Length: 342
Image (cartoon, rainbow, N blue to C red):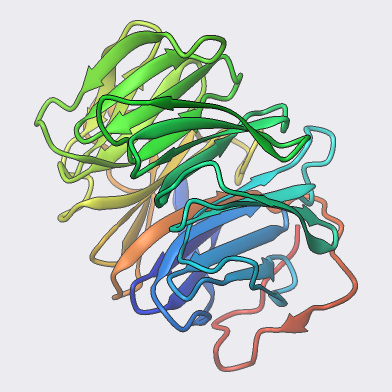
């Protein structure tokens, strides 16, 4: 399993999570780190063998993880790239089918991922898009923006199919694993909505009334969130209550959370249920959240990038089909350890 992080200092960081000789031990092994953008990195995404980063330099950079290859860059946006999401059908988990991106001028771009070419560009919002989420079917995506609107994009036709005004600006939107629900974050509150009609089911409020800066859906209706409270909170979205919480998971605010389950990112025979978190002081930690139900756990693995991290993504390195054209290896000296396919 790999973790990809972006930083304010323009660096992209890659780590591989490997078993450690100690019982239930894991280690984050550095794979690469180099300044891939000319401005701060604002968002990262990964899926199987592929990863992408977007920055304030209006560009998207592409990477092949198992071979440590740089696949090139995309220059189809004319404003800062604010959100990235891959889509891969369940039977094609090795390499994604599409890449969907959003930017600060309200534009969404839909790319074919093999090869990476622009299929459609549209503008569902008038102002900066804060986040986008692709439905598990790959047929539609939700976006939230600074115009205080929620929009639905038909990814098949490349058109906006719905746009509704919200009471307040939302910073994050996420589908759950089934696609039956979606979550919207407004400051310190998380709204749980039915996907069919956008009906509000629950409103989850951070116990410390601190802003939620990152969120990631898990299994069995769980949603993991983090932010200015420095904790990782697991919400039971079926009951609207806190399932458990890792208090003070970091010493400063969290900027990224990645959930990895048995079907995505298995790294040992015991198949631990893993959550990775990144904070703005450069620390990345990996947790076995099963232990959090009983007591405050210690991180299974930790790495310190000593940079101001802005985003985090994770990917399982299973069997993959790597593109044969347009790739070049990351220069030696900028790569800490040769990537290993699995």
